[in-house]
Length: 345
Image 1: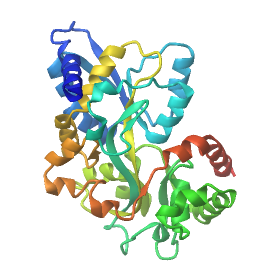
Image 2 (image 1 turned 90 degrees about the vertical axis):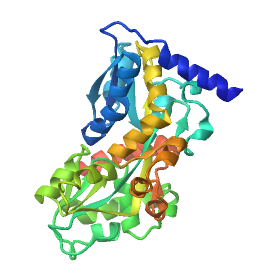
Image 3 (image 1 turned 45 degrees about the horizontal axis):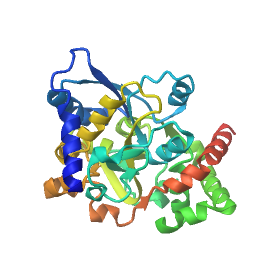
Image 4 (image 1 turned 135 degrees about the vertical axis):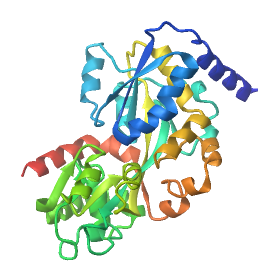
């Protein structure tokens, strides 16, 4: 009966705007690039076809400062935001995001563990991992110890700007097993250890902020290796066949749909999230970029060859580390401040 009620609510959400006004639209902010291209095919265009409501897309780099300012002055122009898990948790605590009516998305048991949170629902599962261009590099790096090996692999290497990911990768390069990373990083000695490890390669780090940066930097030889989003590398491989990924020591996480506090078009925003969470739409998304669906029913519908290249494949998860959202929600501000101070020195 509960499933029927939820199914009816979803149908109602998607069916109540069959003949909307021509100017009706919802603004969705995401990370752009290949991610945006896949979202257009899976979510934006089908949503307009199904409801008549257009999606106006904007890109950002995950920094919530602009949203924080909009919420503070009660002038929020973003209707739906794609946000990473630690930022979702912190934003939920701060009041930047609204609590999500979970009736919108159906049965939470239909989603992979961790995909349904108080203030958001998972869009996809992704991994930040080690990537390299075999056409420009001698050897095949296998993990973060190789990334730190300046003698074996001389040259610049790319890391995403910020403490998050950099500290975890540094500890794994220093011999900490993935399962122990957050236990170590939760101590002052562990934090100091991670920054000392970063010191070893600091002059050789080329920092990146956009998901497309590592693809470009690996292709033109700016760096010999880089951390990168698996989906961006996979999307570039058909044209840049030398790009390779090492899954060991990758950090997997969710991106979520969230509703900003004070959103003007809450009803339309909720309809979009409900639509994008359906198995059929998530299947199309995974077929267009190598990120794993959060809806289990979408996973079941995928071709096995497609599923094998996703972060959710058992072989790719074997030596991976799950992003510890609670850790970064508690310690993120302090660690990012220390990172900023360290980077300036």
